[in-house]
Amino acid sequence: MTSQPVFCVLLIEDNPGDATLVKDMLASASDAVFQVHWANALLPGLDRLGRGNIDLVLLDVSLPDSHGLDGLNAIRVLSPSLPVVLLTGWDSEPMALRAVQSGAQDYLIKGKLEGPALARTLQHAIVRERTRVAASPIDSRQESAVVVGILGAKGGVGTTTIACHLGRELKRQTGGRVLLMDLDGAANSIAFLMNVKSSYTILDASNDILRLDRDLWAKLVASGPDGVDIIQSAGPACQEEQWPKAERVRFVIRFVRSLYQFVVIDMGRLSPFSSRIAEEVDRLHLVSTCDVLGLNEAKGTANAMCQAGFDRDRLPLVLNQTPKSPGFATRELEKVLGLRVEIMLPESRGDFANAALDGKRLGESRPFQKHVAEFAASIAGVKQDIQPPKTLFSFLPGALRRATTTT
Image (cartoon, rainbow, N blue to C red; front, side, top):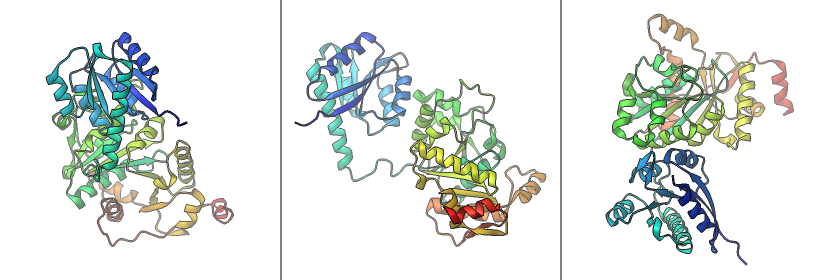
């Protein structure tokens, strides 16, 4: 005897009576088990969708916060390969045709719903979409942006500086469209360093995701040096309860994938928010300084990410402020931390301080920029002749030195 398939359905319906009717119909299905998650409006539905583990969306076309095909379009942006079946209280052939043309799997009339037919429609929609995706030789995201996350092991490791230089270097090397996204709630550091001013922040984008399109996005972003686009952080003035929900920011990230070649995100330090954002990142880089405290924080951050289900192999280490006289082999530190060292950026604070005296907020340092160019080249797939240092500095304490021989 074969077990019944189990499907998770997200029902977005504002009428509690209709929602109960649908749940009861699906509960009596004989050929499959349907686990129904209910949201009474589109935005809560998108928040739930962003948490994953949904096989199909059953969407009412008339909701308090969306009407017609707006909800379908929003879901298609967030999850383009997820099957969507629309529910409506009126029979409209033109609407049904437009729904299917816009990507809906089917269009059902509430007054004509019957339990077995409803279950069969949903199951067929799920199977059809899975078959289509499996048979397609083309990844629907192959033309989308590479999203690069820069996560600090602790404050003061240069995460924002690295993100800014990396964004500019990716623009210089590829000529493609690049976005710098500031998701560090501590300050609007990217806007300050890149010397841009805007009236809008990531909070505005996440609060208006139902209207988010290319025209609205063009109003929200600021243009920085070298043509790099910037979306500001909500900043410390934003109250904790106002800070954008991770699910909605993930929606924004998925939206901008189609607009850029590279998206570089300053994620600040590890938090529940940045942990959720990491799920949307293609390349996540953990930044630390070479002091013992920084390395200890890096190891702790990596362990926390791994406990949350993140693959340690996808969390390379970027060491910033590396001194000129290294003494440890890279592989020895990698053994201690359990992390691959991707690149070491040289100590350049003096260069940056001198540049700041000349009024250059972002700073200038040829050694630093040379290494960032190599970092950007590895992301963009551009060949570079720069070779990174192979060893670390010599003043690590004896305890860490001994750890490399006992681990």
